[in-house]
Length: 209
Ligand code: G3P
Image (cartoon, rainbow, N blue to C red; front, top):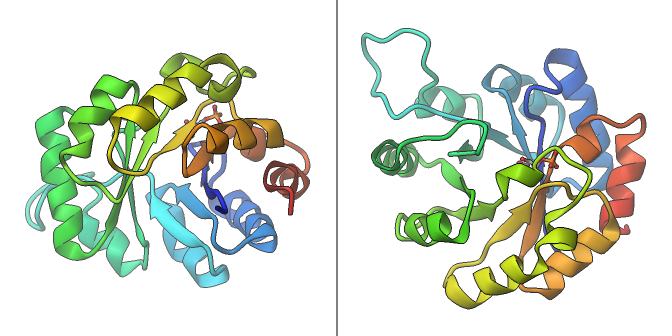
């Protein structure tokens, strides 16, 4: 099975840098999912064929509120969906529930992050489109979840009914291979792609063509 690859741009890249990175990712594989800041969705959708996700949306309805990003807004910019509950943007469980509901209502897919198996089991009940488990202490580091917590991936595979991805510290083809062998359907990656000189080469290395 071909791994699902998600690249989270975080706040490492925005504006023209984000568009350039997206173009490089597209050259590797247009089926890669990218999570970008809401302000970059429109341009990246226009300039690539990638599946573009917002990094967050709020559950509010249209009306009197300031500074929120509504599901309708990213939908009209042609985002495919939204990331939610990343360890760097945690939501309370009831807020997450409402936000997934709002995404479903406007036709946005939800990619929900969990920091542990326990949290993943709770989130699974909300039926997101994708569930990504990332141990927060490994996020942004050099040691991957595949290298340092293979037993966690195996345990997730045993306990979860739905498919899942893993992320945190992923930086090599070996990391992707281990994750897939232990039962993940794909990986989420950020710093190994967003913060390198040649992201295209690194991404090709991760997915080995
Ligand atoms: O969402 C992916 C991300 O949190 C993983 O970050 O830098 O460890 O690949 P990184």
